[in-house]
Image 1: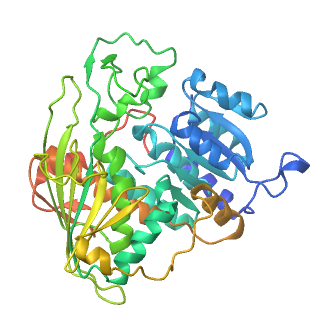
Image 2: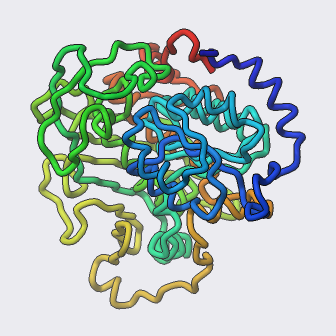
Length: 438
């Protein structure tokens, strides 16, 4: 097996970027369609595959062959791989773009392999596992001028558009605080030795992660997946807990509505109330401070508070809003707005009665995946490109950095460093196994 060699991929990228936008079609029926590689075709990846199924699926990759069975049956002409490194070695010249739907610890590597070779990328949220990976992916996508999209598909809904229009119209008055909460909690798991129950190559599943694979007994829940599928997200080695899992979806709304950039300070607190050996907290609060901006979209500085494991904007669970077990609340001088994925409510009642919605100014989405496909074919950009979604993901991940550091951190976005707590640096990046560096 060839290891990931950054110089080899950068060299081949020069030729790939100079090539025409779309590779040679494999048949007359494929004219005008993109040739795509799908890395992770099941569960959330299956939904992403549905979103791009109109294109020519050239290759499918999943370390677990059972996970890929349905996709392989649906696209019998697609070449199949269990190792995405082999996929790139084999079909690189045949593909235009890649869809990445792996566990978080494997997001950056296939994404970078695609980008450095001039291939457009759709990657699931969060964009990467660490802040340093986000910076590298964001920089490379910009340098290569490629079309990218992160899988925050809620961004494409009409409800989010209407909320953004309301906030930007100024009808709420200046926004001083945004509360974001999610009631989801991790599922407890206990380590159960080293012998894996998985019927696939767990070494490949680990990918770049420099830990020994461990078996885990997972508590019963509505998420009936066999370890390590899905439940990897509750362990720092592979994911970022509830914040990394859902923060990009919910914090996307205030990032968009308020043109948030990078936070200047981040403070976090939390606790583990569930039974298990998992390392991520099930109850957590993160307070971000974002600087004011001037110019056309001028606004004062904003505090954003994230809460998870609770059904309202307080860790004690005392404050809740009926119908909004997970939501975003904008607090303005004149009124408040609470929103979730599909609805919004204005508060207080007196303000709501006099409210007049601003004219619609944000066009309906053609679809989150189609937006990416159309931008590749016709030029242009996407709403959740890696520049925008990179900033969003970075802020989300800094919440975990602050929690693990056990201190309020001061963030210097220009240097991508924590300036006040040296120990925080260890959580901004991670080591990789030999043969997996990027």
